[in-house]
Image (cartoon, rainbow, N blue to C red):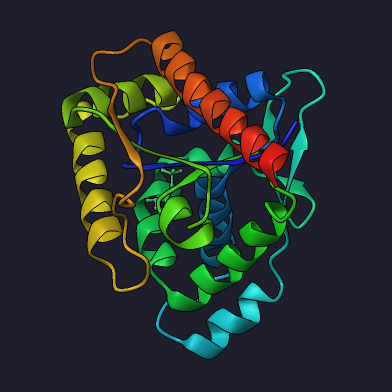
Length: 234
Ligand code: DC
């Protein structure tokens, strides 16, 4: 069966990662959460007091950052590791969310992570989500999805997610953080968040998770079928 790349981009907390994870499971593809990679770099920069305005210091810090993903033996989730340490819970905390858009707007950071992401998808058969997957990382991806949801619904989803991890944050603070991140993500000079011309737009405000997953899997199956027919003709 031919393998394809599924690129899912969109705003923060619109359910991209949850959808992408389940789509990957159904397709039997690995799933890469690129937001987690930007969060891991942000955590490293915070812990090591890296100046965000000093390119030399940034380059030097990046050479010491090693990010990988490993399956959690009991929870079955794909955990993010920073230099061998499991940072999955730490990178989701509010203090990291508050810095991550600024760090991910730095050109050196983007170049390093995009190169690693491209290596991960070299043999295709991957589901990757983020902000620039369909535009910069894999502009040739067979299936591109641009996902969004109503800002109020996104803030509520994020609040629930944090609450489940024991972090109680007010809805207004979350809505403000999402608004700031949306602004920085869409206005940065380096690969800003935008919908690729050939991406399929999905507003999931009124959709259930099952409906979203089903829709993306159906679109992926169509693309796999197309690749199969193309290969048969070649
Ligand atoms: O998906 P997330 O909210 O965990 O992403 C965290 C931040 O990382 C987000 O504010 C923007 C940045 N990001 C990015 O710039 N490019 C990506 N491909 C993924 C995330």
